[in-house]
Length: 167
Length: 167
DNA sequence: CAAGAATAGTTCGGTGACGAACTGTTCGTC
DNA sequence: GACGAACAGTTCGTCACCGAACTATTCTTG
Image 1 (cartoon, each protein chain N blue to C red):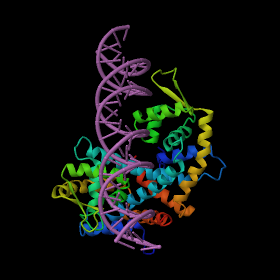
Image 2: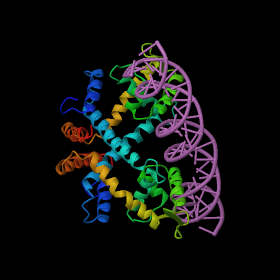
Image 3: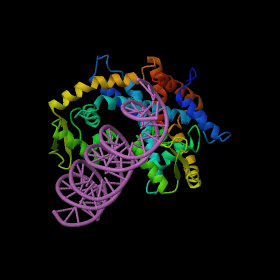
Image 4: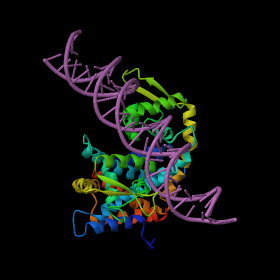
């Protein structure tokens, strides 16, 4: 690869050639979206490899993780978890079924509002999370490892601005 | 939301509190990854909405799109497409089946290497792509709409650096 | 040049996600 | 305080995806 160019530069250049002179195409937008996708995919591949061939899956960890990091840690409802994780309530039911079956969480109907269900991690759940969280953070740091602390701050500033435009 | 803070700031602050004093946790890394996920999710939701309730699905478009933007446009193998799109070859077989059934592409075994299959868009395929590509770009521009041209360049510079560290 | 390794694509079985429909509970309001 | 709307969670049917096994070619090498 030419120095200073990544594979997405090629992709964008190729596409730009098809759109020559058309102002509707913005290579910087296309590049930014594609690059973010690329980076997240790299992270996901690493995660998948780390959990491959185990009984404790990436989804299990993902759900457990969001449970541990909730505003009121160690307690959340299925709907809250579904939103945090980014899946539907129906999918969350399935995920919680599995976690409950393997003894990682408990489900208890909230006595104050009997429609709600309170999900809590068990001791085994906490331990499973604790076992994997460090390696998970290490993988995240790996994929962004080329950036200095200052650059990371700058990156977050830009991303934050984009998000504020959406919220 | 406090001025200048996005929802991910809250998420990171909450998590940081759990890790107080532990240098293994880096809020900037966590923030950057979570924000990229957030932005791509926003894009994906918009795309899903645009294709909802139609016969022509988001996956159909996705596949067709990568076919049109290949190095040799209008011709690619299933494996190339699978890698470009980010699914397995098995999944790509299914996607191509559907596109072929609906007359968007043709499959022809390469006479020079009869293991390979050459995928090409039909006229209908090109037209379908053309119909959706503009709106798709508009959606991408929407989710990054808060950023100026300069900021987009800066964003790409940072992301590029991260990717070069991975490639 | 024959036999085994590598490659391209497909088939198959299983899993997780989704939207829609359903059950049970609580809220709102007249 | 009764009844319809809203809400929380689950169930159900369908669909796309994945890894592994399989078929058919082509490459390699002794």
